[in-house]
Amino acid sequence: MSTEEGPVKQPAPEQTPDDFPSATRLANRYGAPKPGLSRRTKIIAGSAAVLLACGAAALMAMPSPNGEVSFKDVGFSITDATHATVDFQVTKDPEDSASCAVQVLSQSYAVVGWKQVTIGPGEEATTGHRVDVRTDSLGVTGGVNACWLLDD
Image (cartoon, rainbow, N blue to C red; front, side, top):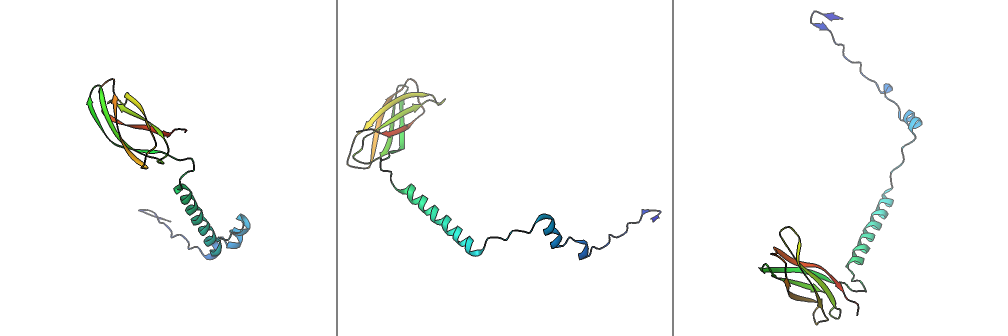
């Protein structure tokens, strides 16, 4: 059929439920859908995940038996092209000794000053320290590179 304006479009025939594949035919072709997890299984799996997460958090929160040392940069002062002062805090067991590497960096992140300091046993777990570092050229920042416990 056509008119002077062009072909006439026929409406698409409506599909009936018989035209759709039945669930049985789909199951025969692709296999039956697997049943989901039961509510009880979901609750057990969720509880187990929560218990494991709590156990992992508790394990990470416990101090290690061999001791640890941590540090925090507090500040620095660049005196001139040959000197800098670095302030930092160290946290460790009071009876342990630690060593820290203090560095001063230039604007291009090159190490222009380096000093290793030993922190002996003390009365407090956290102690503050001020270290003077000689530099090869003008530094722009200073801080602790690393700290580690010393063997007694």
